[in-house]
Length: 499
Image (cartoon, rainbow, N blue to C red; front, top):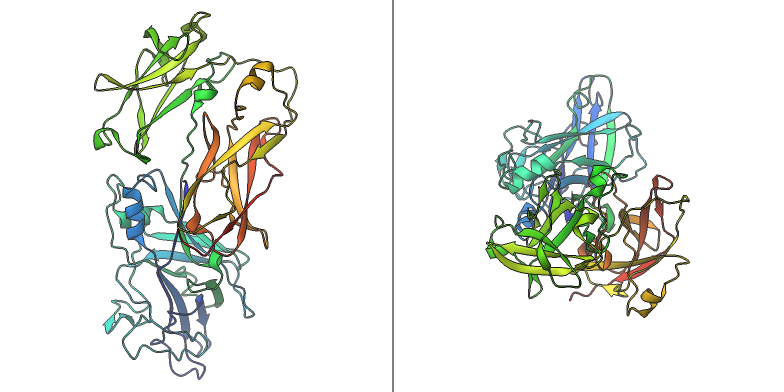
């Protein structure tokens, strides 16, 4: 799974705006239960030099993120990015243009409150419940009215709005890592008091312009996919070359000659680090074989730095998952021993012997391909509940493919591995992309592959119960130097029931 959303646990709009009588400021008002969040700056409405502001407070469940990291749901610091996302709420009043919002980390705790009124600001915190422009919780005041926040670069982030109705999406990784306070983040730690979102300083102190008003959907919105989220993204794709291992070729760039094999330490359906330690790393040997049993001595191959070796220390990809990357020449096998078998050792003892691998030879083509595919999802169910995390398998073959006698004789037809494939999820009723393709630097929707074909994991709690959704896939085609969306659609429904 390379994609995880965390929904806000608290939000509020605080303001020092004048009430409609333009006499009393609404600094005691609370809007913690409103389904809308609002940011604005109004200049010279009450007097020639008056200023009125509104800011947004947000908080997310960082303890859940920390727990997910400890359990391996999200990877270690440096391997994941966190994005704060708010969805624009259309409205009939004036919308500002050409401005910046700044997201800061709050430095003090606050209460959400029970207010609703965003027009006349009549919901005051007389009962000392909730935050407002002056008080952050109960009778405790902010050190500075309008919110206490950090201004260092690791805790402050800008978002530019040109037209004005754009959604907000900012990379807040450096701050979230401080909240989680993971080993090795190099940033130190901060208490999680959430975010404050305001117009950037130069806009919030303008003596010529007003910026009224920017609105976003709040966590209490009836629109599930418009609620504020912190989105974790990372590239979790595992590309196991067991069924498509190639000999190295001088016709290919060095990087393309590198192959990877994986070993998984499963016990009773769960992954475990060897000896319960992330520091214990197995070693890979390759043997040639006439069948599935290793024979003769360990073969020499080349590590990722092109050094000749007959054993190679692997790397720990995640809890209980180990990867070795290498290249191999055709001279390591012969007609008597046409296969390679991977043997993994730990502390001098063999712990795992893999299946026989048939290396393939790179060859040139006498035509420029334009493939089309037949795709199925063999383990797709009709419905899922929100407390499931599912692994989805993709079976792919080329359209018009004709098996040879050997393939027909096999019980199962081998799947075609797509080296670079991405998925998206959309809601069928309105075709809204709820998880769009992400093939950029995060590559969070890229598919893994192993000897059984392509696959990906998905946390189903990110999808709204009661609706039908569908998967679509996009494959990278070198012949056109672009991703090409496949025509196949795979539907499923999210149920209200929990397993």
